[in-house]
Picture 1 (cartoon, rainbow, N blue to C red):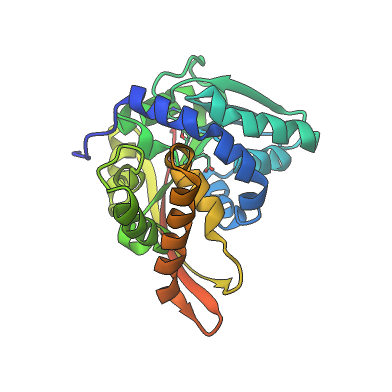
Picture 2: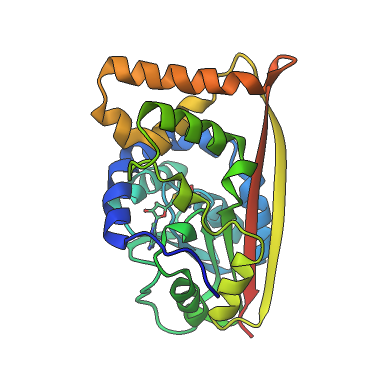
Length: 281
Ligand SMILES: C[S@@+](CC[C@H](N)C(=O)[O-])C[C@H]1O[C@@H](n2cnc3c(N)ncnc32)[C@H](O)[C@@H]1O
């Protein structure tokens, strides 16, 4: 199947290495909102106690930490990411949590160094869209799963369906211009079309495949400036390069763009994510 040409891996590596510290700083704060995405992903992968799980594109640690608790001491999680900087927050959080069933490794999910049939389950939350060849990544996941093993990927739906992206696209365009390579919202949503995940999984050799659509409506309290964490995680490298005045203006532009979603004392937000899941028969 045809999917948009993916980003260059070296550019992605450079980009995410600049974001590690921002994700680490915000990881504990955003983990409070992780469950709405984690629960359906973990459910679609059929993860339970005792499973040995590969987490791809772990970033600062969710859903990996939740999965490590779920599989318990008889199970394990191998937390992997393309860049060491993104794993720093995850390492810190695992150490603080006392979890002892997590190991870490830096690798590209398109080239897994594991033997065939190494894992019961494989998962990836918000990572596959950054991969130049998602079919290759899914083929690798299939190879390292045991027979009967399951994989599940969570990706963003089309940009217009998620309020945060619409606001950020408008704001970033006003502040920096959307053609800046560090403002890459197109890549973020590139696998969000209906049927895209199903096609990738079938092309990767899976014959038992399921694609689900999940839409969320949420209300954030009007007095809460909830967007600062997302600004840092999305635009951290741009903010680092900006002067304090430019940074303040960027935060002001984002706040102003959110105002049209404020009704009856709350920000009304929507989000659309898709899950592609498959079983190795
Ligand atoms: C949006 S973050 C997601 C992190 C975490 N899974 C979460 O949901 O919060 C995307 C992550 O994908 C990683 N990544 C990008 N390309 C990758 C690849 N080819 N292999 C493994 N990880 C990759 C990045 O380094 C980054 O940590």
